Amino acid sequence: MINKIVQSLAEAMAGIRDGAVVLIGGFGSIGQPNALIEGLIEQGAADLTVVANNAGVGHLGLARLMEVGRVRKIICSYPRTTDPVVFESLYRAGKIELEVMPQGTMAERMRAAGAGIPAFYTPTSVGTLLAEGREVREFRGRRYVLEEAFHGDVALVEAWEADRWGNLTYKSSARNFNPVMATAAALTIAQAQHIVALGDLDPERIHTPGIYVDRVMHVPYGEPTVT
Amino acid sequence: MNMKAKLSGLANCKPWTREEIAARAARDIPEGFYVNLGIGIPVLVANYIPPEREVVIQSENGILGMGPEPPPDQINRWLINASKRYVTLVPGGSYVHHADSFAMIRGGHLDLCVLGAFQVAVNGDFANWSKSPTDMPSVGGAMDLAVGAKSVWLVMDHTTKDGESKLLRRCTYPLTAVGVATRIYTNLAVLDVAGDAFAVREMVPGLTFAGLQDVTDAPLKMAA
Image 1 (tube, rainbow over the protein chains, first blue to last red):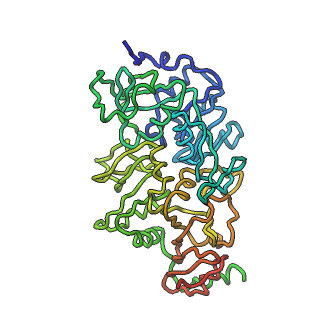
Image 2: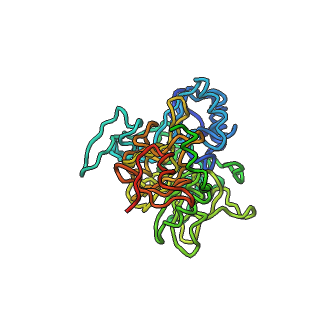
Image 3: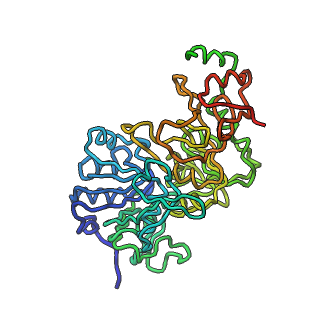
């Protein structure tokens, strides 16, 4: 019997190594898997490279992971968010590396990784600092920048519902990067508000099929309180 | 000309407020347009699209058909816009994930994006993500939107707080995209990008063309 549901955060985080590239879902803190991030802090892996849209809000989740000194480098599109207090002080002190990536390029690089596409050309960032050092090629009279697929060692995602095969649904705009990241990592771990019986999810409405998911942790935390 | 003399041309006019700039831009968005609104003044544009005019608003975090902020007792805490504020979904709206959202953006399906900017140049180059290497750069979805949407409008103040023109011959800040901006709504005027100059379509009441040129580094001409 396939059963991806784990009973503890320790089990969920088992095997994550120092130096891992960790993809963390969410936009602001909506769809950010805070319980899994707490589990990762407990687990202790350090020297991490984290990919997330923002650089943490307040002292919650991703911000706390940075605050306790586990993140060597963050790759994100928009570090300046509602309340990036932790990131800002680390950044000003030179204690964290930042790589800024256009949001769509970030999403597509992970999509490509999950889809077996090693690289692609995009019009985004042509003629800007963020295209420096990248190959530029013209197609049908327009210039494009070559971007490579971006693979994670681990993806941490927040789902709404899950079953024991790891099929997932998401809620409203909390979907954001989660389904993309779920496809792009060697180990994908989901936290879900609701665990349902196999067969109870409407197959027409499954957003992430279980093939992309390795472990599921039931975290019925209620409603997010900050954005 | 010194700054004081430059600004004297503005003495007889009342610059538009943020809300008035947003309202002015909203007036020009046709029915049926699919539109993305950036962080800052651009998101305010949604408040001024007349309810009888169907315009579909996209938010890059995966919302197509975004509605206004909900009343406090009807908040869906999983539904926020790109500015991380609670919003609603209109009937007919849908959710997609980030890669699909940006496929929509880059794939040329949006009719328009409205963005804020630090600087814009006569050739349509603009800068809105970083003022210096020491500044914390935050690009978000701006570079994707700028090259993906069929039209790019900028809403911005005409000058910095110190009176420096934000409408330039060439941008000095790192670019967001090359040659894509088509229309600018500032607190003083509505202008089109016209290659060698900005073409003035409208000015705030009381402002003269000469007065506007005095506070604008880039050459201006009247729109045909």
